[in-house]
Length: 188
Length: 188
DNA sequence: ACCTGAACACCGTTCAAGT
DNA sequence: ACCTGAACACCGTTCAAGT
Image 1 (cartoon, each protein chain N blue to C red):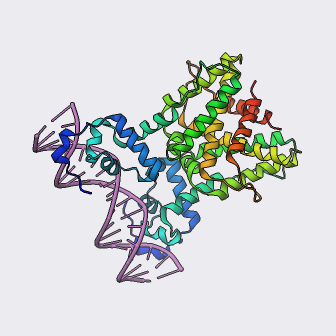
Image 2 (image 1 turned 120 degrees about the horizontal axis):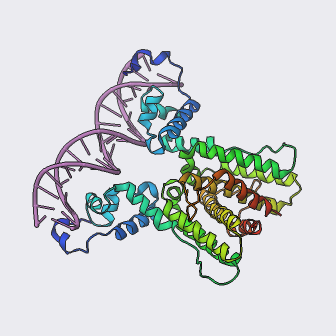
Image 3 (image 1 turned 90 degrees about the horizontal axis):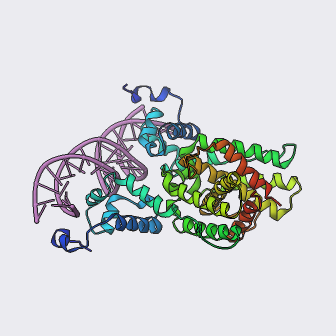
């Protein structure tokens, strides 16, 4: 399929940071992080790779930061009603699903320096615990413990540590829920 | 500094997989994962990049797998005496230090498919719990929960989520220990 | 303002050749 | 057996130029 950019370049909807990030996420989800290149991303957007730099001046660095922000910033619903255990269980399930759905960005979530996204998420967890009557310090500890557990468990799942010493297959859903109970049960 | 490979190539100690992995780890620790290239690795070993392929036929893939195996395979001491809580606390402290010392390989630990290393580590944790009198299923859950927590927490630390909502600086050592108590306290 | 085209300095990897 | 040198098909990014 041959593109003819110079003919209809002015008639297309122009690029935007949002469209770029979404296209990048699609490439990562579908083909893996290693296949996310500026040239391929340009192709997906029907644009020359260099056009991306007009919207993301810091280039690929900024692109990867954007992916992390998009995936890792998913705060708990602080206004939710019910026991904090249930609120956090629901959040954890959703966050885990999100990380697994975008497993390709997990290595970026793990090491990119992007305080905003994870800090906001951790703060929302702490707030849920505070409203649930947990004191400041234990709430702060529990928020980080929970976030750490969910991220770490997602990492184990993605890696597919699918044997359990002997020959038992692992039911990840069950294991995640059980581990979650361990973490929540230890709070306070 | 100019190398003269053809002159003394035969007089040098020959390459080995071990030396290659160690040199690679040194580059990653010192300059970051992004600067680990086959050419630079060759330079560090005073060899042409292509010589590496003779020892690692699968090339860079195999190199990265080797790094993960080197860092992530650190089982607990199953023969250790004392309460299982103390044994696991000691292991967790050591494992965390190991991950932080090689923060550059953390993204690889998180997503490379390399069952052996992490599976062996998880199995050793389970064994410690079994010997401590914990039943099979809870021991299995706790082992994964603990491993997930340590990896996830190391990820949070590396990312430097150094604010805690308001303006409190984070003492990572304290926070890690407190979260560890949450996890261990929830076991059973 | 927004995008293109050519160019530069790098990559990983192959393959034939040297010792 | 072990390593080199040249080559290939890619990268990210710059920069001047087009509309």
